[in-house]
Amino acid sequence: MSELTSRGFRPDLVRLRDMLLRFAMLQLRDRTEAEDAVQEAMLASMARIGEFRGQSQYSTWVFAILKNKIVDTFRSRARSASTRVYDDEIPADAFDALFDEHDHWKKDERPSAWGDPEATLAQTQFWTVFEGCLTHLPPATARVFMMREFLDVSVDDVCVELAITKTNCGVILHRAKMALRVCLQNRWFDDKGA
Image (cartoon, rainbow, N blue to C red; front, top):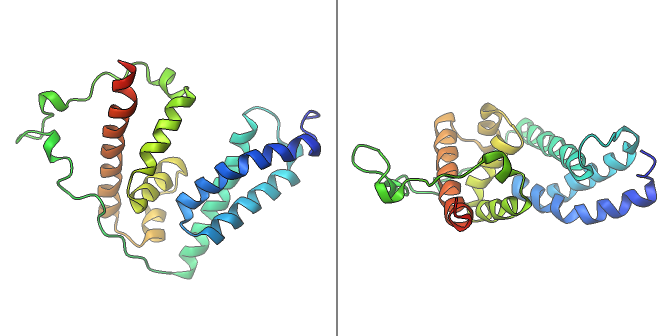
C-alpha cells in the first residue's frame, strides 16, 4: 500500500513495540528470547511491507508475525528437550465455593447474562480489562492459556513445551478459564449492568 511507506511504517512499529514485547514476555518468560522474537517480527514486517494488503489492521498483521516467531521459539525449545516443572498454581478447590454438593452453580454465584458477545468482544475496553485479568493469573497458568487459546498451539505441543501431561494441561486450562470468568464477571460484566 502506498500510504505505508518506510517513513510511515517505522513509527507504527515503534508504537507497537511495547505491546509486542509484553505479549512475547508473557509467552516466552525470557527477556532475551522475547526481545529476539519481537526484533525478528519487526524486521520481517519491514522486509515484507509489500505483502501487507490492508485487509486487517496493521497491528494485527504484525502480531500474527510475532505469534509465528513465538511458535518457532517453542519448537526450538522442544528440540533442545529442556524440562520445566510447573506446580498447580491455582488450588484444586479454588472454585468449590461457587458450586453446591451436586456440582451445580450456587444461586448467588451463577454467572449473570453477558449480553451480546460479539458486541462486547469488539470493544477495546473489554480487552483492556481482559488483559488485566490475564495479568492476575499465575504466570504459568496464563502462559498455558495464551499458548492454547491465543497462539492456537496444540495441546500436545503445549505439553511438550512445558513438560506437563495432557491431563495437567486440561486442568490448568479449566482453572484459567474459571479464574478469567470470575475476574471478567467482577470487573466487566457486573460493571456494565448486563
